[in-house]
Amino acid sequence: MNKVSIVGAGPGAIDLLTLRAVERIKSAEVLIWTDSLISPEIINLAPKNCLRIKTSSLTLEKILEILVTESKKGNQVVRLHDGDPCLYGAISEQICGLAEAGIDVDVVPGISAYQATASSLKKELTIPGLVQTIVLTRTSGRTGMPEKENLENLASLQATLCLYLSARHVEEAQEILLRHYLPETPVAIGHRVSWKDEWLQVIELKDMSRISRNKEFIRTTLYIISPALSKTKQRSKLYSPTHQHLFRPH
Ligand SMILES: C[S@@+](CC[C@H](N)C(=O)[O-])C[C@H]1O[C@@H](n2cnc3c(N)ncnc32)[C@H](O)[C@@H]1O
Image (cartoon, rainbow, N blue to C red; front, side):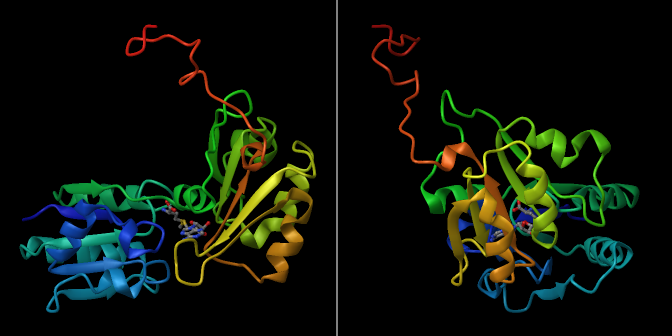
């Protein structure tokens, strides 16, 4: 019985896969993937005779049944998730279900949507003296949020805030954010970042919901609200001539 590989497929572009992810996909005998969020180009890396199963219409029970059955047959099973599997990937319930069946996993990290968005924008999200914390979160939606993590509390940090899974609730999010960030705070709206039809712009917080609605973004949209996206020039201590450390004593 082989381990089931849980593999991060990155934000979309095939060349944002890790070498380890490519290796796992190329050796898959059974590939099971989130079809709405992973490009066919990536799926095509799997061998021709690999059994391919899409998960969009499947329940957890059915997914687990496939993972367990195929793994017990001795097949190399690869479960592909978009971005990094540790973020909103619902992998925990799969890992627990597999453990109950006596099956181990290996997890391969992927590039998350917020990293792809920052690099497309050519931006650092942690500017010294301005912002040093990144919050990865979502609006409540059907999943709900633990009370202490509500957006109001997180926004009060005024950190770099990456909002996943939130396009359907963008008006409500904007209203809450405006209570803590200035209306002119830069917001990156990234839709299908790194895909061929990527749409990515930095706008002001006060325009976030209007622009998002005008573009009819519902899915695969990430918002990064951050003072770090402004054009202010800052410099770090790390490379300052006055800052000494182990590798640059004088
Ligand atoms: C189920 S979550 C999975 C997140 C994923 N594990 C990650 O690390 O990026 C799906 C959400 O991630 C964001 N997302 C994923 N891929 C994206 C992309 N290429 N462009 C913009 N947002 C993306 C969107 O907020 C989308 O609603």
